[in-house]
Length: 159
Image (tube, rainbow, N blue to C red; front, side, top):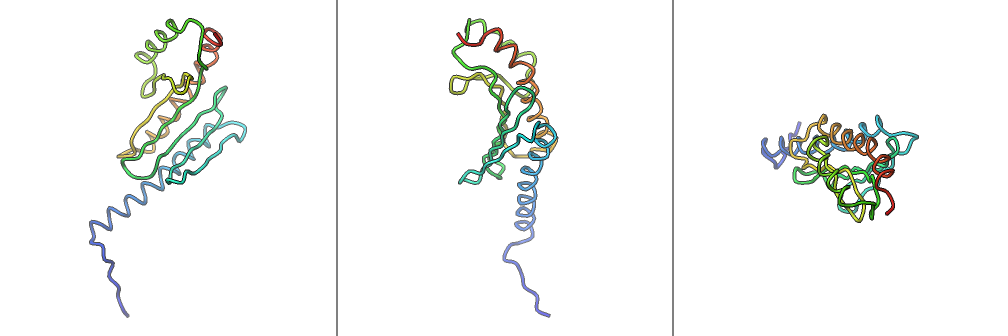
């Protein structure tokens, strides 16, 4: 019987197997978390030409987006949800309120502005990211957005 040797040494092979296993798990973990949170079969996914993923799903009264830029340790997972369209009524008071929330109740997420929209957002590199952290990031953003969107729209919406 003939035995063929791989051109990789054992350390390179181990690192490659760990990277392949880890990268596959991120996508699976994200999809499992979304499956547990999404409502009305609302989850959708698209793939970018660069090897990334973008998911969208409905949670309560908000749409939540999850972007995975790739599968290496340097790539990122970003979770965001729009809670208010700008311009808004009394923007100085709104900004102060959001800063206070950022300091007191958003945990790993934060309020921010993207393209004239107030969002709840969290981002992290994939290096040493555990399934529990993935679940926590997605759940925190979805929950904070759903808990705050209607009150923000009611008090500060449509200037």
